[in-house]
Image (cartoon, rainbow over all chains, first blue to last red; front, side, top):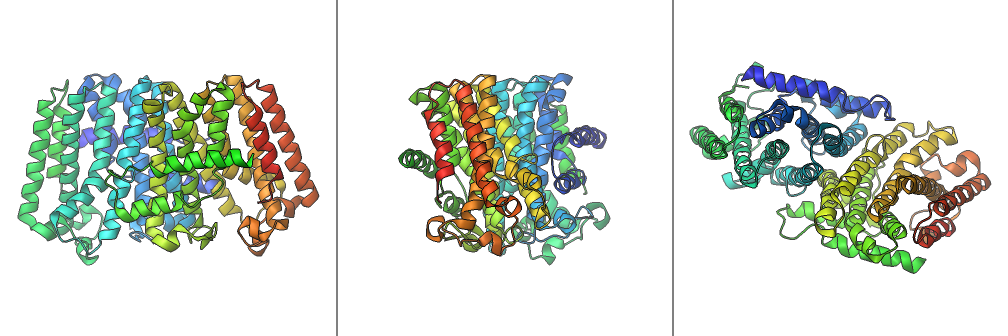
Length: 298
Length: 298
């Protein structure tokens, strides 16, 4: 599985490098700031969901190729959200994945603009999937609408806003779940749905795959909180207990470590059940990703 | 003409008020911050270009109705750009149109997120034009690609980046023109092209209308600089000579007032010539808007 996800990441990264053509007239520092964060690594888990869902539904390599621009688009969105989240007015982080954050290198103004440009460019990649990669026009437009929904005010941005507003005021697991659901799950739901749309999924399959993605997103975030509490510092690449140091309210903090682990397992089981019910051409990879994300130690 | 533009603005503002449905699950302060700036007034000139271009090409009221969601989308983009431009890390403005800027009311974090959410939501409105207003799917997808192009890194955001990077270092009218072209013209070109696409324009018409819009955008911006230098304080709603006070390099500063006025007239004449060449069903409104924007005193 590790090798499979690595292959997804490499495919995505190769495409990301060419996603801002050299002939485009972009001020050099803006272009550099965009590439700096796009190429700062990370698990590239969202693109892996796009690619894997497309192939799972259609069962052919052609779905992988067709969905690559959308895989890049979701990474553009994820990258912009990290740049803006790290800003002094937001989480005020100097480092991410062991590298200086965007605004520490390029200044706050350029970091804000690089985020805006990455967010905008994501929507340019989706019509390209229709023009160059054979995705039907109706499918591409549905993906545009999904992306704007799951990444917007009632989705990822809403989750981040709730997180900023709730700091230290969160007292129930439900409130925290709202934040996780929008801040993390929504973009994973988008990724799985977009891939599935390109693969030619039915409405029923889209619904089941959304449930899978929603659960996996929540489990992924709770697992992150657990790892932050108990994980190995070197593997995770950030200071253990940094959430505690920042007085950040986490799932284990609210319900305890054991119940957190039980919740991760329950969510994962439900996610896998949804996949099996969806009668996909090739369900294996999506099942394996679910297991892998729960068992990971970084 | 003033009445016509007022009617365009009222139509747009009525639609803007319902563009974030009440049933959507958006954190209240984020929703308030979005509405605060959306409803802060302004000329609504970009939506007027969308609506007018659609009707000019098709020559029927149906084009106006069909293009309204896109008219809202461009105002969402314009509004987000103002919120982010006003941030302390950018232009650091406390007031806009006589009202406190977004971050002065809602704080920097919420202002950044409100901008992100408005930008994202613009792309949600375009598929709606296809789903509810009868715009063909291919047209809607072309408009999505145009919006991402003209508003992105090689468009409006690129212009703002060049502006930030060039402050005080700009010495030629060409450099300044680059900034105006992207910071102002690009979104006007988008507006006119999007309306024209909905009206069913040919490639040749799109090209001529783009020339019109590019010139009008430049003329509009130079006129803004002229008015800042000579206009009447009350009418313009900001301190006269505020650009000079901020040591902002303007077109009249670089080439003188007379040549600036001559350039505005030349650009406007060329714009009107392009409209006449395009053989539109109803060219009058676009011609009138061109004249109005040059003759305006605020």
